[in-house]
Amino acid sequence: MIFTKTNVNPNLPKLIFAVLLTIYFLWIAYDPMQGSFLDHVDLPIHETGHLLFRPLGEFMGIAGGSLFQVIFPAVFVGYFIWRLEYYSAAIVLFWVGQSILNVWVYAADAVVMQLVLTSGFTGSEGSFHDWNYMLTATGLINSTKTVADLIRAVGTIVIVAAAFFSIYYSLYPPPDAEAL
Image (cartoon, rainbow, N blue to C red; front, side, top):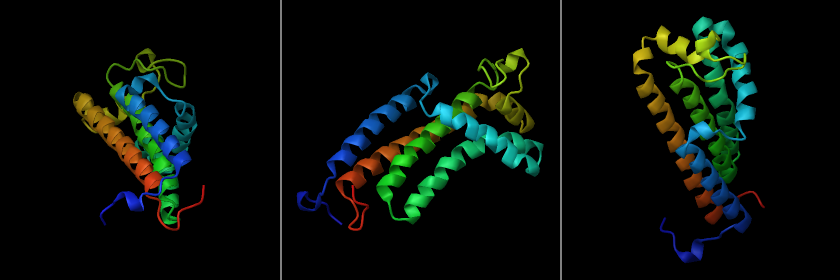
């Protein structure tokens, strides 16, 4: 379909919200170490993931924290897609990207272990570090930078996709789009 000015039907509040979120989350993607207000939401979800994945064995119990931290918001994206609420799915997709970048912060710290963990200590001070364990167990500890760079790239791509789709669906809402 070729889009012309005649079939643009912008929802101004949604467009403004999408642009503001785009600016904010691109800023997070530029410097994930600065953190996000969602970090406080991600942490309990991450810790819950350890509990949920624990029955699958030691490695999965440890990996489950980072996995669940990304899976949890992705489920909401899927829910909104299922309901054909694409704008809402795109908005929640920002959270998925941010969560992946939050995992990057943890993964990138696997060797130096200077990140203060839930124990109040860093991995180098004796606190358990998920990503140090996982990368050591998989033989990838010497490739930490490569693994972390890949995670950061995926998180950034997800945020860019969220930006594109949230702006797109605020300009071109589907005919049966939710009213707002």
